[in-house]
Image (cartoon, rainbow, N blue to C red):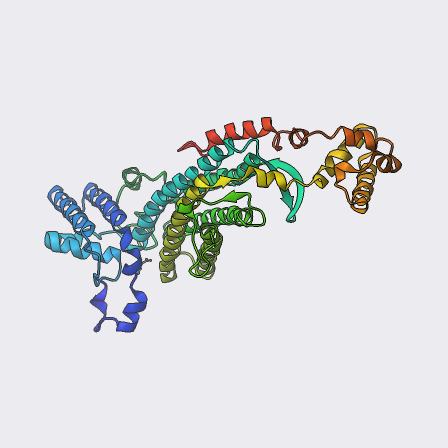
Length: 457
Ligand code: ARG
């Protein structure tokens, strides 16, 4: 394909390094699609006759059939672009040689990869949406289950299970916005940029843009052929989604432990041990946590590749696809598994309730003192003393005898008598965004809207 100026072909060692077909063969549908649009553009520009146009379009359709039947498997070509061209020669003969007029693999590969990425974004978005909907659906049954909310791994304040699930759903709303934002910039057409300085033939780039479903035409050919920002942006969005799944997984691994026992994974999402028959392992969440590292690695690898190169196409850029494909494939495997595991897990309401330590009423008591006119800093100190007194007396915080409480502050005994249920405690923090019933209900409503397909907030 480019052998004219060389007396000898590339060495085996160079060929092994240089070939990208083992990775980029999966771009063939995009390569055929973009090539057909290019044929139209060449015909309109007067480079091809109508008969040649028809010949090439039919030929490309037959090439697509061959590729769908596995023609790429074991093919010797350097990359997907040369593969498609060789197969086209086999179909239509010498006229195939006109396809590459005014086009370079530099604008071709950028176009193919953007087309592939647009589709990948849509598929990932659908899988993120499915997880979001599952979290919201599970939250519906988790309104009355109250468990300790944790900070620093310590029991802090009581919250609803529904509220915890929604705390993992909101990041996914932001993830969908990031994907949508990346999608906008991915939808810029590089085709017609040539190798770096534009095409030598008067192709209509606006028509090409329309034909291929892009939003805009890239404004600078040197930039367009070397721009992989869209890959970096999608890899970042993926790395962050992976991070969110990792955090969700980490939390559920803890809750599924024997010590917590808040949730039980369904048989169909549990794994066993080859040695210890009693084990019910949360591999699904461990892998969600583990794979996040790999997706982060893909992002860092791409940025590292990009940072050293000048504007325009450099062969370094060939590395982009292995990284993007790996991250997309990884996330596409993790998401449905996490969604299924969440969908099928059971909640052990009693275990959650049993973990509610009355010491978590300390903030409620401090707030009650504030209502009795004590400045908060002072009330914080007084409740601290009450906590110490409870420890010394060997009772829980809500059971400190009235005489001991009154000795610390006269308003304390009435405050203790006023404490009420855990439900009341949760309801006492009624600000929008809090864990109260009304807040959780309105969040669920908002999230149901946000996780409608096609809606990205
Ligand atoms: N296989 C190459 C890639 O994936 C296609 C572009 C090659 N361009 C070139 N001038 N050699 O980046």
